[in-house]
Image (tube, rainbow, N blue to C red):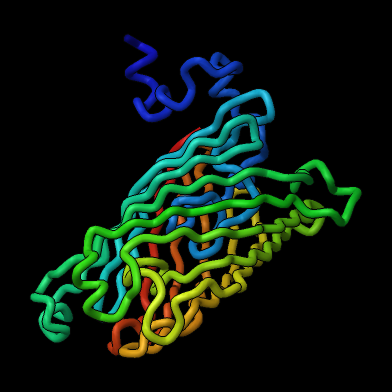
Length: 290
């Protein structure tokens, strides 16, 4: 019973029966090398998944984290909550539920005040080769491939605004390089997607209904062992005729209290959303795990 109180149930479900379960709390990786929680639940920056695996588990251990994210925008608010498990610093499994609250803007859009778009994101990531920490004598980055399956419960509204589907999959390839001597991390990610506004407004549209390749990038500077600043960019497809969609950016600061808790604050510029002008806001993320 003491073990059940100590570990969340979702971590136990993921770990029971796997070799190395007894070492699940051996958080052997360096502080901050798990990244923070990306808005869709993957380990990475706020906008961009990195090739790093969630949690601090080494190749002989399991790591895990739970997260909550919030983005306050002029016309909307975006919330997200979920969890991720890292298996032996090789495989990552994640889940996030997002709710996009239209507030008073919902009435302007004919949806009703406070209307919410709901999105569930199930993710998987596999480290293919490289080690961001230990390969300091090589230019080869850590490289991972991932996918995110996204499904919305707002199908009828999404089809009314021109989306082709309420669910879809993103596929991405991330390369992350950590320069320990310079305390610098850089990441480049290529994503195949047809998601509108990260999937919150469905997939595909009247302008384009197929997959397109989008670029995502991050750069971070570790000012102290426990404090990092950085910036990110993420391009997005522009599928819906009724509303232009632009590139998203952020500038962030992340504080790693310890390996069990981190907090991130960012300025986000998500571009125009649903004809409501550029949505620039403040992002907050809290991550707890091991």
